[in-house]
Length: 269
Ligand SMILES: [Zn+2]
Image 1 (cartoon, rainbow, N blue to C red):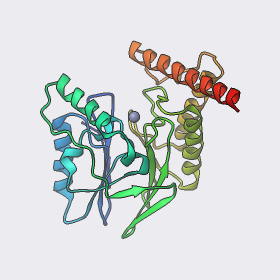
Image 2 (spheres, rainbow, N blue to C red; image 1 turned 60 degrees about the vertical axis):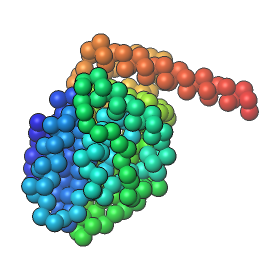
Image 3 (cartoon, rainbow, N blue to C red; image 1 turned 45 degrees about the vertical axis):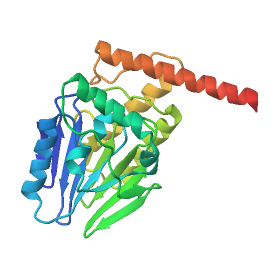
């Protein structure tokens, strides 16, 4: 299903968890981000790539190694693949097992393979220039340790991955301090690169700058409240389902674990 299409950018929205996959088309190249989830959805993205391709190189960027973002890798083995250094160091067996478990649960026969990364992003502000197209990558851990986000110029796009969602709460599966730092970084990009379109990994795109900032601030406030042991205010658009509440409880456990670790370190010092 297509969530939004404008010249040069198509945002696909999966039936599952409003996960977005993005196809960016510039005169120099095609860039696909996190192709997922279901076989027909992945096949549609691949087909659309071939329809518009015209000899241009195909890049695939994986924002992070969570299984819902890598399970489409089998359909793009011929692409030039970009991901972070922590991404290539991740426990592949574990990542692939999560893909396999998903396939098994839903009787899906798709191949299960880990992306073969061509360009490794070692540090923030790594720039990849392809003709007139410029991709500026930033390491953005916090949600997950391998996470990266990137800017596409001259389109002024911010592909932020699993941040700034309007449908789900911030999911802290790595580190809440890093998460806060990443949110600050993302906010600075919005000003610095005059971002016109923010693309989250789950939920709806945003083309109004004040709303982009608001989404980041809501996430920030949510995490600060969590760390202070208070009940966080939820953004009105975040789901309030039992599933989301379970994720909220998981966040609480994560923050508690971090605080205990900090305390233990202090005792040790
Ligand atoms: Zn994720």
